[in-house]
Image (cartoon, rainbow, N blue to C red; front, side, top):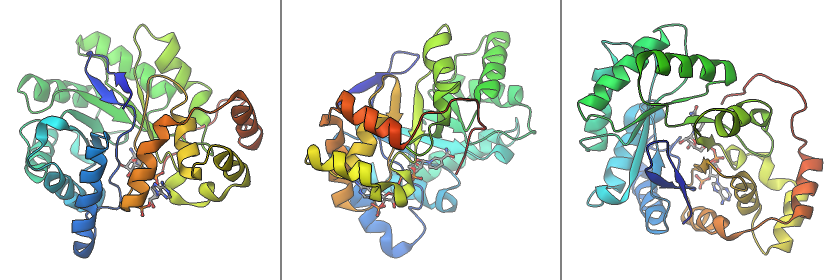
Length: 285
Ligand SMILES: NC(=O)c1ccc[n+]([C@@H]2O[C@H](COP(=O)([O-])OP(=O)(O)OC[C@H]3O[C@@H](n4cnc5c(N)ncnc54)[C@H](OP(=O)(O)O)[C@@H]3O)[C@@H](O)[C@H]2O)c1
């Protein structure tokens, strides 16, 4: 599995696993654990979850999936903005650690930004959690370019570590980040902040039925999901986190890193899914 370097030098696989919609139904638990375990065996050792998913249920699924193999995995979880204050963040962190049954979170993200608490308070508290070893790094999610500039200013002022990632919606149908956010994070800042692309196969909705994707998939003897993932992963400094509870989907996704799209494929996809020509609001799911 190819890897991406995080700002502190740690390397993580370019392809991880999402968990939204896991941990919601008891009867699906065993299959969800098995799917994540298979994904880990296939090299997708970065697992993304959140206190929000299944109201903590997804973190419990992850806890079961990583049992006995904590050292092989890189765990990302996210805190609700309403739990990201100085007083609430340490408590939310403890609850996540307990559900995941681990001692430290590899990467802890602010799920999205709200007006309160102030961003500075969240960054200061993330840094305290880092100094006590409860988390190893922190980052953000759903931040647009202006939010990121503000965050970089705060980090400079507080002399904190740089944010490890910004997790955002990115797939063929949602290319908004290419206009300003992606260049800001990967080319124009003093250091690279890797992007974590969520919903890379379009949340399993209509994208995978697209005729152009089907045509390209046929040429590569691949599935449309593999082409959608190969397209997201065509660029450096990017991590994709597809969610799959179906083991066939997990196998499919793991193989997407072997696919190399041609110039013609990329041009066809640009025609079908044009890149943004102007700044647009960052969409979220
Ligand atoms: N930070 C945020 O605000 C945010 C928002 C959304 C998502 N996320 C994270 O990103 C992860 C991925 O995003 P997502 O779950 O929205 O969408 P996604 O990964 O694009 O799509 C997941 C859906 O696609 C299906 N699927 C996966 N692989 C497939 C394949 N090879 N062939 C056909 N169908 C396939 C899955 O089905 P099965 O499950 O049946 O296999 C599931 O229904 C989430 O799980 C979550 O961890 C973060």
